[in-house]
Length: 263
Image 1: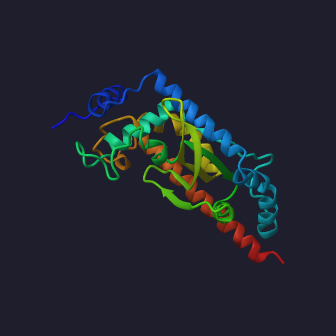
Image 2: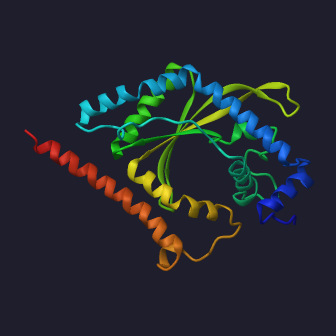
């Protein structure tokens, strides 16, 4: 059986030997060129303009409905690009680490330069942080409605992982004219990910991001259940995410009870 690449460096070698894809500095510059061009195009689009200009209206509508603000003060959306090393790591995870069919191709086929701009969902992304639990669904409805107005498809995934990660990923797509590897241009449909989470969950995400990033690179994980080893890093990190999610639910319950007793 073909040996599984156990590091990103070995994965680079595997891409070159098996698929004749050389990931060198030139390709990294090409990736930066494609993603930067797509980002600039999206920033001037009707969809992005409408979304950023609607934030205060969403705030006011939510406050009128609940008595609370939807966003923290001075909240602004920012378009982010996935760094090349993170992008390559994700293709490594999809092609190798999470590929249950190895050494055959994963479901949907190999992720290679001919298709991976269209198949990696978070190359271009933004983060919507709401203050309260119910603000997540409120924001989903508003953004989904905006996508419909702009004739853009929209898929929503609710993330609730064993590791204590909670968020909603809203994915839409847009066609961009971007450079080809030979510096001609082509039209590529690139997904845009809008992640929606709460203020508390975003705090824990920032605290644990480096830890989770390291775990993703491991080809083998401990077979021992982390839920039964209170000394391991996973125990405290993962349960902290679950605890915060529970606390947010309790905050919502208290809010609703207050509303019931308010004359």
